[in-house]
Length: 313
Image (cartoon, rainbow, N blue to C red; front, side):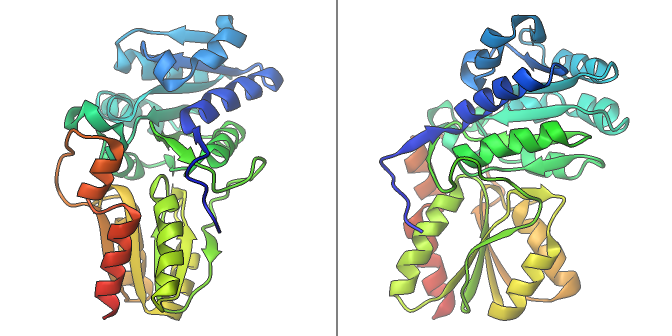
């Protein structure tokens, strides 16, 4: 699999376009934003369907409660704001109104993880996936590029219940072709025998390139894309771990509570295997460019290659 770094597309743009396209065929879809429609790209939907778009202003708790109310009338509300606000400022409303009642509300947190960049630690959600994964009834998806983001929005619209979809601020290189269909089943993108690498979101591109470089170093990587953190595909993880005997998880998130934790919980119970978790280790983010921060926290291609070479010595 070859990734063209010169050709990148906006994952936020994929969200906005998918929402607008779905709105043409499903009149029950509505969109809500908290004064950030230009950043989240809900403006695409708002332009097409102004009567079905609601900007509540900087009032995120009202944002979620309004969506919950709309869902009781048969609407399919998509709520959008920055991930740190979508999950932090609204946690009580998501927990006690949306998830407890199992309402059909879709929450899209844009600007997730370190790649928010210069906005710094206050705006870099590194715990959002963990917060949402621990809520009963919630589904959690972390797409890796334009096509997978588009598909994730479509999937959420077509399936009942609360969803949290975490979308990158940064434009991302294409990994999947347009028309790709996301699935709760983990996807083995590359078969290997020496080490299993499990990832999702922005770090998938880094892992694809790292796997190619490691091949040249004599290390055969089995690469798994796991966009669904919840529900979690235990079977694919267990089968791969049995084959390779070593697992590395890579995620643009705290190593606590999200993908790495799900892998460790699965394997400790069903197939004890050594797991190395690459991510942010009990730390807030920092201010810097997206590339600088990915490198600083060891999530770029070079850092992944270096870590796996060290482990395999």
